[in-house]
Image (cartoon, rainbow, N blue to C red; front, side):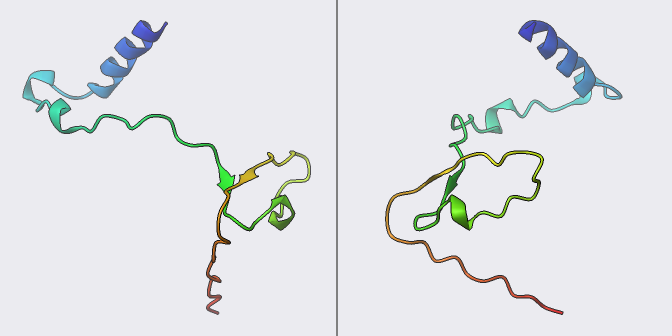
Length: 79
């Protein structure tokens, strides 16, 4: 299934282009660094600081980072 997906994505990416006129930039594309870390709360914050936006969907439980309390600057409210 993965091989078929790769074939389809290649075909879609070339749609409307002549492959022989394109430049191969594979050597300048960086290698992915790995998986994205799980979401977290800054140090000093807890789930009680979160205001869920949708009551119908439960908000995921996030862990807080250990360490000194993070200073989060206030957002200016320009009228």
